[in-house]
Length: 490
Image (cartoon, rainbow, N blue to C red):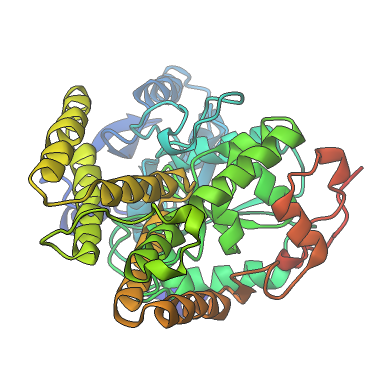
């Protein structure tokens, strides 16, 4: 017996003593949603402990009916706990030996039988967590493809993955994190593919978490694992699509599923994982490549279009004769750089307002913003038309970025480069862009270079980033995840 186990209070043969402990510890009799059902089986007192709302009442009723029917059979002889355990018609039945474990099981949605005179109990998994049915996530929609998505129920989420990978080597290891919340966390990986060192590192980081609870679920886990600090760039990838999660498992990645969250964490990831979208793999390779290039163009525009245009406004002599029309044609009372910042922040206001506005009103709000605010701002001379144009194009590039976290980080980088251009002009753009690339190159997520396969350069990996290859042509798993089995099954 370990030191930790020895500190836990064992189950007493006296049900009254166990009940008093549960009243003091959990609030039985005070909290309306936790309760005790008392009855007799074969002339032995039995307590059934449960939590309303987390249990499937139909299962409990069926089990109780089967157990209570034992009283009608006088020939039933032997140990009461063994007889009851044999008559529970459920596939997941286990034994608990201390009251701390009883508390954890009951508050997780299981029911526990305590029998008079016994120093152990019976736990039955009849969990039925409240939640919605699987549906397509709003941020990862595709024209062709499955319409199911992860939910807030960790059992449903593991089933959605298992349905796509029916491999006996797929592992779903579960643990609990949070002193008070005791949140279920599942680590998913393919045993013969994933890097064992990465799996152990993630387990170690999760076990080392000391916190009251995980109210923000997977986001809290991310901050503990990757130690992001004030770095705005995402170091793990989130997905709400089971097909995307299954695809990364087959590549050798490790997934982290957190109960109460519909998002799954994919590790390790690079920057280029955040610019991929399921739609590219639901179309023909040529179409997928075209869509990918357009998306890359949009991401580049979201970063560099405004700083480059603003540089030409400051230094019009840099423009060739054919492009001399670029730049505002009239003088304004407000500096152009201030106009850009105001317009960019205005777009953020609209985005936040759209999130917090009910759907029937969001369309009307967008029309008001576009027709009234934008046009009137130009008419009164607050903005020049070109500022609105280029800010709008940059914003479209931001919205075309598949990862929301990456799009916000790129917007912050764009504003910093704009400030450098405003102060230093051409050197500001060069130095700002160089520092941006060097910053990304210095980032590592779980010892994974953030700009791989660009830095360090991997020709095969870089080619797969640029061109969406067909599935039969993808014979090798990415080397960056250090897979045990580099070659895919043919």
